Length: 283
Image (cartoon, rainbow, N blue to C red; front, side, top):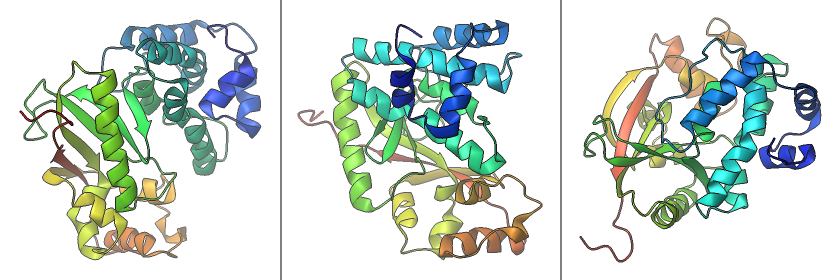
């Protein structure tokens, strides 16, 4: 693990409690064939700005958990080589511990059904800056007005925190400064977001909510089918056949379930926002 002590590793990844015990057991012996294969995949992707998660390549979920644990110090060293602080590295790598805890909530056991999402973190081009996460990638031409191949910031919304306009404003402002400083050769004019929160139905039903204010920042380019996303991210629940047992205590919970009750289907909104010019850039 690149010479890092286990307790330091777990602090870096925000792993504790039962998850720390399970992870320690995985690290107690040398990596097996599946883990070594996953590590090779992660190593090949480091610093390459991938837009897609790694594929399983015959590795098990446990192989990927162990690989993520063992590879995290390599990512931190990569960040440090770019001048990015250990604190900034830890802010994004803490997603490993967060997703382990989410897995316990969803499945009641140790595991990581979101391991593929976390392979993006291990490529070294996604960062948590304030409330939001920003993923530096080349555009695919689908998020107007960014042309194919131009640099874009993909915006992701971690679950742990509010979404007030002030927090989001600060996050965008700090992100502009961060990427201009550490990736000065990557000219960024557009941020994009793919989220069920950008489904126009949600803003119509909850027009005064922070979610609606967030969605209004983006120009909606298109929508695609994602019938289970709203349920999973609202309730951390994957079984679409047992929705009747879910709570309806908040306005958001009620809106999510009532749309499905009425025969509707949630969609993924794909939107973009043109970023203001960086300070000192008047072109």
